[in-house]
Amino acid sequence: MPWYIYNSGSTGSSCNFTITTTPPTNYPGPKIFLCEIQAADNNQKPILTSELILEIADAVNSRAESANVLLRATQ
Image 1 (cartoon, rainbow, N blue to C red):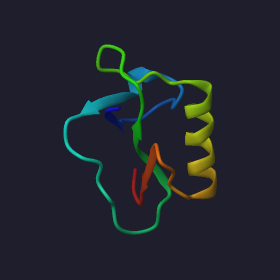
Image 2: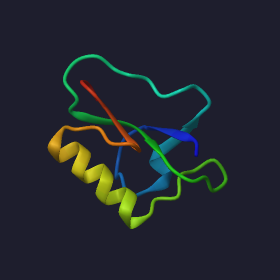
Image 3: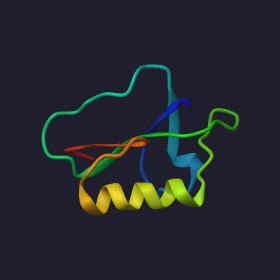
């Protein structure tokens, strides 16, 4: 599955993500803000399942990355 960089706006809208061809980045510093997600692709936009949206919310709220969600220190 490809990775997508979060731009801004609602995390429930696939329009707020851009597909990336580079491997996910391990950002230094405290993990606070949404950075990248891994999801199935639909015309270079992520398919945001209810499970993935919950995984994003859990990662941001707990400040703990998951298999499909990466965080970074700044927005």
